[in-house]
Length: 254
Image (cartoon, rainbow, N blue to C red; front, top):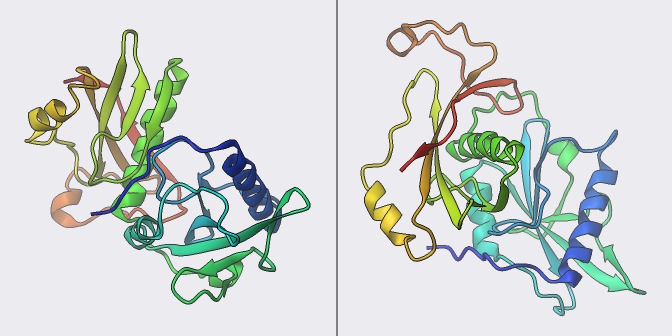
């Protein structure tokens, strides 16, 4: 069991977080374009995360003086990094002359286990890495989230953990509403509503009685889309960093 902190952050942490993000952005030549987490909406497993080449990096900010209240915990950080086949990193920081400052040289990251410096560029390889279920779920959630935002909905929280329901909360017409997102990896063609959906809905009824199901089917953009792919294996894997195509037809009321 891992604690997932869902509270709002302080203005001081937001200031520190912004400084950390700008530091990471400045380290990437030409700017970092593949942020996975670059927002302060709960829940928190990591504070920042990004993809560089074929590698994923998950970061928790550490105030070395212990004065800053930070959401999340190392167990959650290690959990998401392991589930996504990525790197769990701390970013030690200190407030100096009124400014939050990264203490380590370079990218400012250290390995959670060894506390040795991590240099993301050095870890990139030509290896094709198949997307984990967490990465696939996070991609599916992004598809649904962006669609809701395009409809003018205000989102209050979202996450990409395929084992935790629901995936998204948003402000509906009369109250909060939730969305259970499921992703199908081609050549799978269907996303089934969980058999225990009534139990899931009942656990949230004190907060909201309106839930939705969102099915997102994902394939490689390079897939031949052979109708017999499931039987003959003629399909392309979903590789990290390569182009994907998604089929999504909106929410289904539960």
